[in-house]
Image 1 (spheres, rainbow over the protein chains, first blue to last red):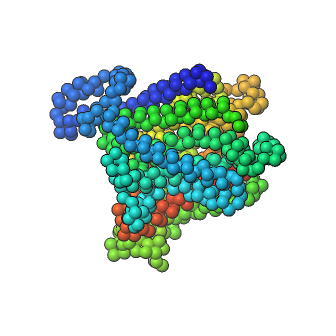
Image 2: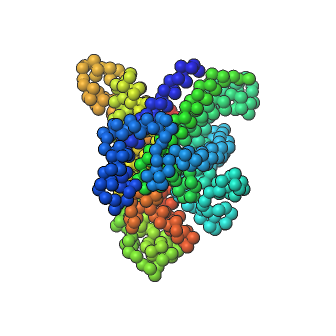
Image 3: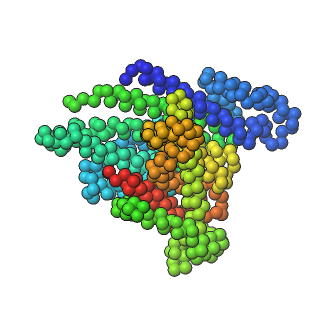
Length: 315
Length: 274
């Protein structure tokens, strides 16, 4: 892995965020919402509206508005919410923290379950264990988050009363309570990820197990378990890094739905509130932060992959 | 063709997938004729009924027959998802093939831009577009189509790149055919098979995305019998009768599993090697 490669990937992130900023700005420009009306209300006088528009720079050409907005963003100022009058940046980043906690726990649970499931299915290919895993993964991929979330609330909160139905408690305030509130959302988010990743692990491992070097290792007289652990898994699990990183895009979409259903004040819920209120600066900031998160995760995954790939040793 | 269908039906995925998709097709075509009750008539006396001879799957919070609503809602949910996927696929296939044909700098620029668009989660993208255009079924269709195009473009490009190297494309270039002719007449027809596989699997994502949009209040509007909307409306009454929630969920899952299995079956049938 050369410094050149890292530099190239960094340039790509900058380009990505530039394109996203263009898209976001274009979309919010076409949105039929007048920022001045949003701030002063429907009953404001024409004079007051005109004065505020002039003041906010809404009369300037679109490209100029974009340049000013981008300049502010580059200086770390994501704008002021039309809804609350507060700066958008701190609110969004605080919300992002809660979403990331949710996302990391979900990815953790997924890795703990999906990789063993995929390995079992591949090793026992065509047997009952394989079919059970296939069945789980088809069911998981076929149920949207809002269905699993609603059913989970019905079963585990309303009927069994094991867990709280909705809400969010900061872990620093009440650790046990906070975890209890996170169990259902984390499980719901990981269902689709588990389904997808276990299927990928299975197909990668099946491919690897059919290669010549695995056959050679077996012919050398190494036991099946040894071959699996020391030769097959390393090669089969490597592409999983890329798959998980790409799934983060899906995860962030799922987070929006799950946060809405479980009333978790994360970035997804902030975005839905912002979209419903047509709070343009908040929408711009939220989408930009989400895209940045996705790009950075994929950057790290690519670097990790390149680094691991160079150093694979059979030791 | 007969040989292909035989191969498709030989795998369990293909056979079950074909069966489920055919079932969905029948419901979409004939559902409104088969429905035993009117889907929107309110009947306060028959609310929250369990399954019975008159109401096969019971009734909902307004006393409407759930079975009839599912049969009629199939069109809103499935047809829209199929149309959106086709539109997104066509758009993506065109961009991907063009990018592969142009190659070099232009290809690099198009692909990096597509990567950038894909960094916005498709649900968020759809939410933004629907909010921009106003919440309605047609706008949701446009939103899902646009959200799917970049992914399809990426897949098409990788397939098209291998087609680009084939001799018949070089021959067309040597004959002096126009770029549009080569892209549309020589390349697109040869990248279609893998795209159809991908499209079939994506229909199940589209069904879920549509249902999610309706669930969040940005797709179909009440009293429509759209399945996602039915789940959304059932949330407040689910502790009174779980059936209101369960049946539309099952319907969504059946369609999603069906198209998923069919896609996997098609891939195996097109690729006899594995």
